[in-house]
Length: 114
Length: 109
Image (cartoon, each protein chain N blue to C red):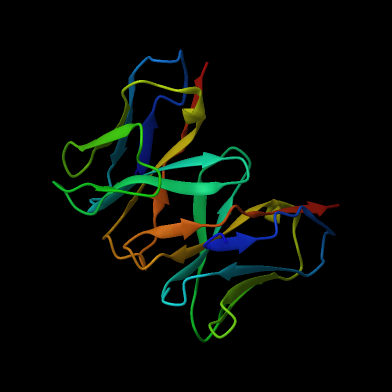
């Protein structure tokens, strides 16, 4: 099983450019999440999708949009990238939205905005 | 005050040593607690859940103190392979998890 996959692994953008980060899981999980990780800040939740067809804002949603395309896929879009969005982005999934369930993470996307 | 606070370390210990990390959380209504492990430039992975009665998994022991709002992780007989960052994770009561910024452990030969 591949688990959670993310593309791309690395990306460099110029300020103002847009891009979409892709995430897919093959574990038949209902819930999916997007986090960003910055040095000394821990992982911060950007958006999550408790189930197919629903999305909710997390702690730091500004500057991002998401799409839960189907049960497997959850994408994160940066419409107009800013240097403050330089970070490592992790997608995760869990069986349900109940926080007592383990979250499985993808390998991450390292994004640099210049 | 951060919702989840950890000492960033690094904790430098020799192989075979016992090391303990604490983590404090601010939301007294939190019900779910975890330790995740993150290797350098890799994704976090669940190490263990933390139960009210405490739990043990091999060389790892996790404890929860609700009255003082902290959880702990004890690693006995440290191995070189235990070198990693350990993330304290607590549910926010809002269907999401809050991750601490992590405690870095370096086990030395």
